[in-house]
Length: 321
Image 1 (spheres, rainbow, N blue to C red):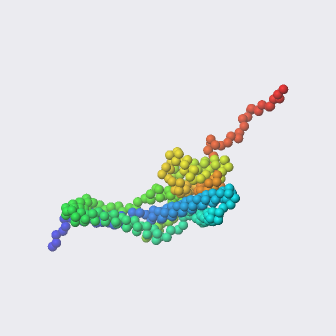
Image 2: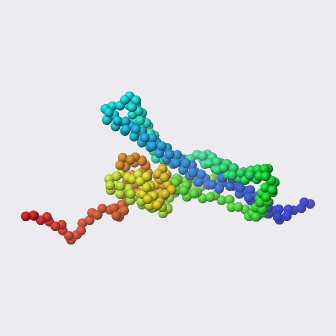
Image 3: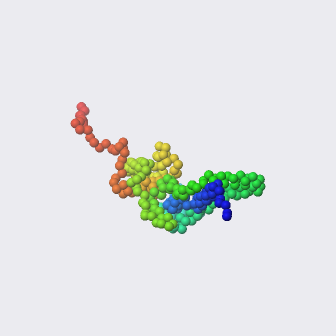
């Protein structure tokens, strides 16, 4: 009859099995939920769209600047040389091309994502994690070959000790929560969080459950747009809003390119507007009014005083001798 394994071997074998299951779960990228992967795909699309818009805006400004300079030279000199006239035509054509590209890009819209893209992103994470797991093993093998066999002995003893310490207690194979920054940048996304085997109902990000910082953002933008309307401006540029926030010590980690996404995450409509001749992404008064379903309110200190003191009459002008 074969002898039964002792409790030491049984406990170590059970711990090795639990560690192997946990490493397989982690290395396969199963700690990342499908919702997070979907949001990361949308986030990458939004960043690529914002980068394309910024590039076309920059090239369009450069072309307009060149065309304006050549027109000024033509007005001063009474005309242009053939080469300069060709440059002017090319600059105007380049400006029109970039403006057409901006019109075609428009505002970023969240479209359906192919499930294959989510699976591809999960496999990408799995490959990186498998490489991270293979590096210590390769280091032990190289150290044992180049230095001394003691490296292998110590590593083996450490692994056996870890398996014995884990024992019969399995790991909790959980899924990590979606990072807060990913949720903030994709807050308008309607998520169909479906796992590979079972589908769950559609979950919509409710706008009523906004965080305190989003509510502060909405109120601040509402006051700024209302004040701009009082000054007969159509709206406020996103870069100006960001400068005001950063002057108060808020959103210091945001760039002008990323801040429109922060505004959209708070359900603030953002599009390309013109303020004092500057065309860029911003918040327009009419769009904000439609989003709020009411007129934007002014802060108390900017409300004009239209009341008149009662009980006091204006003195009549006196005739001078």
